[in-house]
Image (cartoon, rainbow, N blue to C red; front, side, top):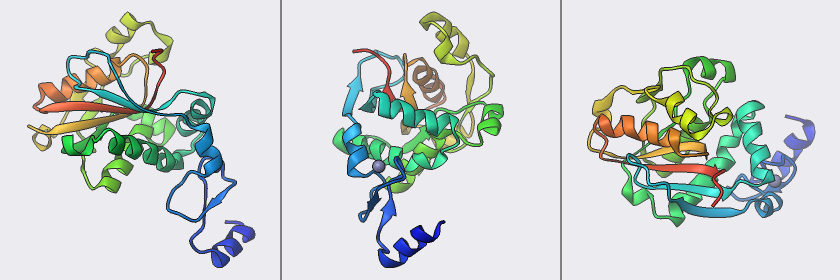
Length: 221
Ligand SMILES: [Zn+2]
């Protein structure tokens, strides 16, 4: 921490910096300054995908340039601390869409352990952890596993995406979620194939219902 930051913390103990721009200070508990807020287009929308194993899927914000860049930083530039502002955005959707009353537990779309080792973290896991902790909902940490190494989904067409992911997720410690309503968190919805595959594994192993929530969606509708 630089001397200016230290001085600021002494003079204004309640102040902290916006995690998106790392420029503006705020004195409330939020992690997003008003400048960055203006660049976010809140949607809090349900996507109609008619999936078989996921009840409803929601996303928080439109996939605009600001969000695209910040998600890129979050996933590929090592800026894992962005789970806090992004987590706040997800919590806003949970409140607006009244999702908390429907669910018993929160989990996330897993990545292969080799990918996690390379990246150092799974961004969706960080988001789910933040949401579960902040809202005091049970967190399912070791329950869905990506057991098969697959090609990057966004390089494939729709049919290839489905085939690529088939049988690539597994459930473990299934007693923990039997009969439960689960909120499944991911960063971005592209076709819904990933959510559907994870939902299928959860439901086939005893989950009562699965709801999906992502930060944003690249589906044109
Ligand atoms: Zn900002």
